[in-house]
Length: 255
Image 1 (tube, rainbow, N blue to C red):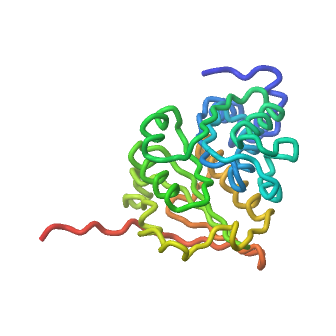
Image 2 (tube, helix red, strand yellow):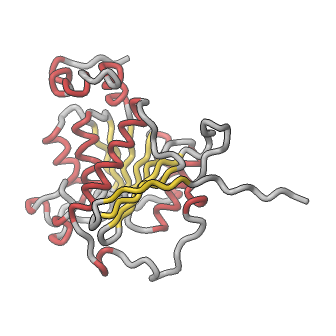
Image 3 (cartoon, rainbow, N blue to C red):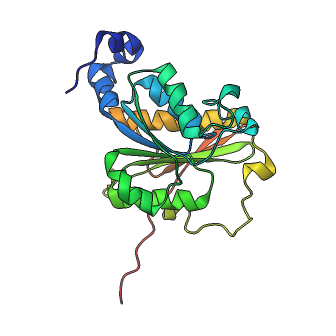
């Protein structure tokens, strides 16, 4: 097991003091290889908090560049990185925050071809994308590779997140649900408009992205109860959280 250096012990002291984390948990974080899909509104706080927590390797998948309208919510970027690739801007911010974190940048969109080439290099996926095609592709790829997936989404003033590990069973011995058990089919084109059309409150992406980072840390360290089979729903206007359980749909049997 790779040991922590003196600087790392001091940096992560508040983690190490927690009995649930300790030195062993921090070493697990250091060994972890996490792929973050999207360096935007959700990916920004995810990347910030996982880098600060000491996750050893962070992969960043994004083919976009930083624009002025991003800065209202995509807090890993700043005015000095306008026009830069988001992957490069995020790498620079992570390097300033924590030099112990290794970053891998992929200037492309996530899809089946990317998954086939690169997914084996990671042991956790976090999907902060803003479209259903990528969300379904990430869920399918993670399920096929048996890699846990933390996935989240935001609307104008609300957000959701869940954890997917469909190859495992729950405490009752039932198979965990898949993404399609939660969202059986993509919504029709135009039914769910993008935030570029309807707007989104910037701090909302921070709330959901931070919760996604927390779920990732729980999975890596092996503490608490992840949101597997549960969808967490946050309503910013009423300041309320609700959790709904969802189950795997029964498979049809041949007659």
